[in-house]
Amino acid sequence: MAANKGRTVIKRRYIAEATAQTFHANSDSKVRCVRGPIGSGKSVMCIMELFIRSLEQAPGSDGIRRTRWAIVRNSFPQLKSTTIKTAIDFLTEEVLQITYGSPITGLIKLNLPDGTRVESEWYFLPLDKLVHILLGDNGINIST
Image 1 (cartoon, rainbow, N blue to C red):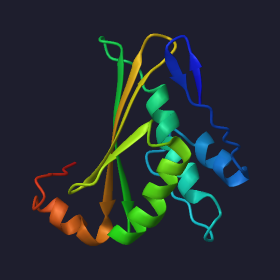
Image 2 (image 1 turned 90 degrees about the vertical axis):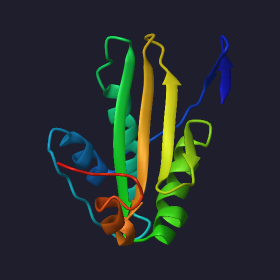
Image 3 (image 1 turned 45 degrees about the vertical axis):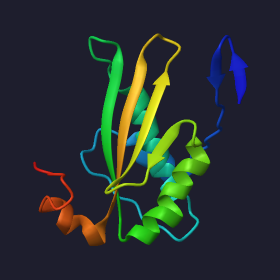
């Protein structure tokens, strides 16, 4: 991190492997899936895809680039020990502020050099509890 005229600048270098490059290149697909062995970079690739999409979102008339994402894993322990840990390790707690509620949420608020602002909400959902969320037991309704 470095100070830059009253701003905090966080530098991260992300070099996408071949599979990730293909994944990122198919950005107009409504659904994309990826699989691979443990440690192959799937979580980092998906975290970066959401972050990149948040930065690229067209700003509203108020100059805010709003996005909302759902990150789903099989279980709560997997969310906490892998996905959330990876997101915090890569984006830092300064960028992605996690709230451990029900559901676990993440919030990114960043001012960009072009004068716009990113406001991105991330919902971390365990699949083993998804039925409760779909039924509204946690105060969240997901509909299509």
